[in-house]
Amino acid sequence: MNASITEIFSSIQGEGLFVGERQIFVRFADCNLKCDYCDTTNGKRVGEVTSLRVLEKIKKLNTGRIHSVSVTGGEPLLYADFLQELLPQIKKMGLKTYLETNGTLPGELSKILKMIDYVAMDIKLPSTGNPACWIKHREFLEILNDSRIRPGEFFVKIVMTSKTKASEIKKAVDIIAGVSKYIPLVLQPVSPIRNVKKVLPRNTFAFQNQAMDRLATVKVIPQMHKILGVR
Image (tube, rainbow, N blue to C red):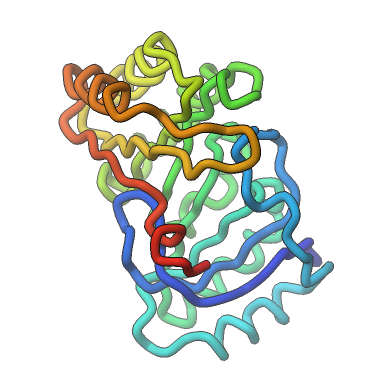
């Protein structure tokens, strides 16, 4: 089975609760959404590759000090059937698996969930240029919360821009809290790109306060790899 891959590399995780951890990244091409702040749309593709070739690359990059292998994108769940073939082999290598996803494909998540150790799930706000995905996000979170993966091993991330509205944050927080108040939320100030402008500091604090009213863990964490100048 083949999949379209943009790149495979080793670096630190730059986002979310596991920021700073060493990971091997398998970046899949293509996405079912079009976020106005997306910074991966113009990446060069390795091309259509087999799971065997991906595994060979992972073996070369594995220093024995890797926290996990991140399958990211794009949207990796567009390749759920390929992941069903790939992930068990990664696990056999003694490595943990980490899914970075936009949280809109709950049916595809169910196919691979038993092979995943960590999940970073985005909630995509309508102000990012996408249709509202609230129903899919709720279903996705419910599947995660009912799985063996516990809150903290999975978390929600929301990218904040100058267009982010308090009403959107409220809707997202209502969905998270409606599943479990113990699901951690990471608010990520956007790294400005093209015409997308950064969120104002006062709005960042206001959104965090708003979320903290209903959730046990709410953190503000920027894209650290962008600050450090690494991939």
